[in-house]
Every structure is written in C-alpha cells, then in structure tokens.
Length: 389
Image (cartoon, rainbow, N blue to C red):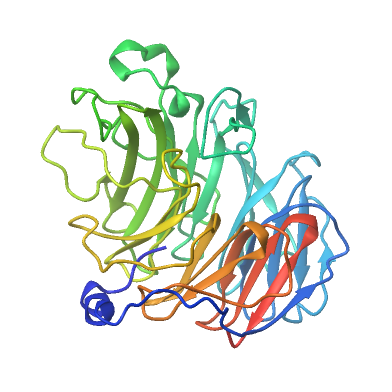
C-alpha cells in the first residue's frame, strides 16, 4: 500500500480534475459463494487460485478465477467462531491468514494443509467498549484490538500488526503506565514457523495541544513493497483540542529497524499522518485512507505521503464515500472499496473515479492480480470480480 514514484506522480498532478459524476464502466460481476457470512478480505496466488476469509472461520477458495467458490474446513488450532480477518498470499503457494484475535494460519501448499501459530498478544476480547472510532451512526463504535493486518514481501517473510488495549487508552503514557503498550509489530522470516516482536516507538505526541507528551497509538495496517521498504500505520482520537495520536512507521527493508516516517527530529515523538488503511506499491511512499475523522463530514479521504510528509500531488475523489480498504497493483493504479458497494479507481495516481458495479452490499477488502483484474469482498458473502477494469 504505497504510493507511486513521486516524480511520476508529480508529472501527472497538473492534469488532475474533479471526479466525473458518471461511474466508469467496467466488466464486473458478483459471485455466488454459498455463504451469507460477512467476508473481510481476499488474497490470490494466481489469477485462478484465490482465498476469501470472513466471519465464524469462513474460508472460501476458488481454482477457476472466481467462477466457483467452495468452503474449506476450518484449520486445526482455530476456534470455529474466530473471525478470519486478513489474508496475504505470496507465490508460488504460500498464504497467511489472520484469525482474530491472535492467531496466524499458514499454508505453503496452496491450501492443502494449514498450520496455526498463536502470538502472545494477551488479548481476550475483540473490542474495547467506549472507544469512539469514526462517525458511527450510533455515535460509538467498539475499538478493534488484536491482529489487524499482514503483509508478505516474499513467501517466507511477513509482517503482522496488532493493536492492544493500551492503543485505545487516551491517557498520556506518563500518566498511565499500567495500560501496557499500544500496539505490537511481528516478523517471520522462516515461513511463519516463528514470529518475533519488533521494537517500535512507544508513543507519539498528538497533532494538537498535548505539550509534546507522547500517547500510545494503535497499528491498524502494514504494507510492504516487493523488496521493501515496509510501512505500518494507525491512529487514535485523543480529543477535540488534542486531535489525533497518529503513527506512520517505516523500515527500509524486511528485518530492519522501524522508525517514525516522515523522519522526525530526534526524541520528538512527533505525530504524523492520520491513517486507517494504506497501500505502498513501489517503496517511495504510500496512499493512505483516513476514515475516522469525527470533525469532518463523515467521508473518507485519500492522501499521498512520502518520506518528507504529505507533499505528493493532491488527490481528487467523489463525495459521500466511506472506504474500508485500498489496493495498489501498480505505481499509479489503486482501487478502494467501501460502503454501499463503492469501488473507486485511479490510473494516474491522483484522480479517483467510480467503477460501475453490480452490488450494493458494503465491501470490506480488495486485492488485484493485475492493474485491471481485481476481487472485492463484503457483507452477505459478496464477492465482486472486476475484469479489465
């Protein structure tokens, strides 16, 4: 979930215009999956071989490019009620699936066999009541905890991120040491056999009035370019005066040290982009989605970040969209999905337009095999296949 090469983005910035009112046509169709469970994510080994994951241990597979899906048995070591939340695949035959709150499923034979590895997160619940995240209709949404995302730059190397209860604790670190760390970041370099916790900054200052005292922060997403670098991010709302405690972390290569990015002054603990999901396709920066700003109009925004901050070209997109995921299969090509079956696409890195689709269910995850062929999944077992988009 990265951004396009800055030079290339800058070259097209001058031709960005307002998004057209009429959706862009695309060849798309919704697939029958035989389940009504909510699906959260989809990952593919090839254009034909893909997995979709969802509520109550739902694991679906296709071997014919999405024409038919069949349900796989829940892998041993995972409770049948555990939601399968994210999936990352790396050729030729390796896939990693998050089973919340703290287990990672691994296959290296295209799903014929799965192994389960549970990380020591010490998270017993999947929600922290009382945390406000975004502009929910009820005015309050439980905060997400446990493993939330995974990215694999190779078949043997993956990063996973988790938010811990302390990540949604809005007390200053100096005033509430008992809350524990806010988040954790895990690395495997042996195909998921072992996972090691990576050192990360313990806190960030808010982007408002908090006197440069650090807060804990959640980690909600991670994205790696094929050979690195990797980024991870997340944010929590502190208050109307304090704003957000938000982090964008970067390591130059898998196995390297993580630091706040853009580079902050030494020991500043500065707070940076407010992001909820991100995609970093080329290694020079990220496309980041912000969908949790209660001070705005409830719509999501997409921004471009590089190593020196939010200095990429401005992004234009339709109004009244709430986005859940983003995938960038090429340097200047990205797709986002969200509420009401919306799918947006950019092919120049700056202007997102709507793709005409056949579904109205909320879409939660998307992956792309090529710059024009993608799978999106959502509520009620929905799978939307885009061909030649």
